[in-house]
Amino acid sequence: MFGYELLYRAQALDRSCTTSGDLAASRVLTDAILAIGLDALTGGSPAFFNFTRQLLVDEAALLLPAQGVVIEIREDIAVDADVVNACRGLHAQGYALALDDFVEGSGAEALLPYVRFVKLDVLDTPATVWQPLARRLASPSLRIVAERVETVDVVSQARDAGCTLFQGDYFCRPATQSATALPARRLAYLNLFTALNRPGLTIATLEDLVKRDVSLTVRILRSINSAAFGVGTDITSLRHALVLLGVQHVRKWASVWAMAGVNSGSTPELVSVALLRARSCEVIGEAWSGADAGAELFLLGMCSMLDAILNQPIENAISGLQLTRGVRDALLGRTNGMRSVLDAVIAHEQGNWDRAATTLRGLGLSESLLPAAYADALRWAREISVDAAAA
Image (cartoon, rainbow, N blue to C red; front, side, top):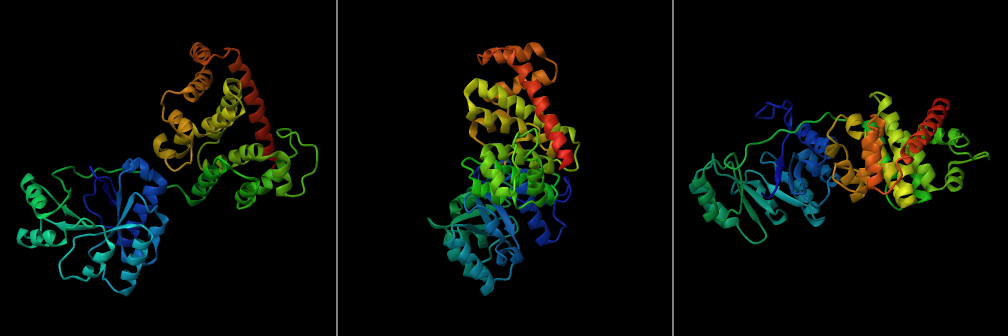
């Protein structure tokens, strides 16, 4: 298997697209990247995106990473100077391009110097036409794709003609993946949450992130003197607050508000559970392996509710987040120390005391640590809630 072609369907049972080309192509981009996640769809294999003329000349491809995607130029695009320039520019920036349903002698001939893939329809095109064309085009720098392959005989004929990639129902019928698109505001908060938790975050970067959201800035400035922070001096500016408290402390606070923004429209209790898990995991993590582990485990606890908050499988919910390997593995249920901490907290949360105690002992920790950590988390979450109501 080489890669996947991503196509838009309005309904799960639709066999063809009745939505306008620009809208359908745009929905594929937004759903694949934001709602589902490119890695979750393709597992790291190349993803072929159909582009209309408008998306091509508007440079929408720059929203995608140059590696791992192929910009597929539809056969109904009229090739003119703007289209040629767009393809030349994308080629120069390292993007792979493909020509769909290529026809010899068409305007698409002008794009051949900039493409890496040419697709030939081997079902509706006579073999006497596509076979000589495949032989003419095949080269070390240009891969020929036989599409709409339905029989083993056509596979053999296409391979003999120089095709090295094959697509069609003979190999695999299309599978439908669905997702509910997130409102733009929730996406903005999710992106903020991701950025806040990137390694190496500086005061300057943190200030720039926080001040982009007015409500977040105001909440931090109003809440900075609260019991949750224990700061006894007046805060005169956002930079003052950040310098005084340090990156880690404010990042945690801002993450709480960002997660609340992601949760808008869902039940508030989901964020409350995430807060309790985050703080409990942090306290246990510090006892288990120090402050750095505590910070990672705080993030793990916060992210452990993203599947419920976003109404998506956890692998899709975290596909676009910059998480460490350990945190990502733990969220996906893979066995590691951080997952054991989270499992212990969840077991305590659900009243499964024996399992919680056994899991903690497996980490070399006293079983009495978890009730104390959870009580601390309840106090901390209560302070956060009081400050939130006042902000």
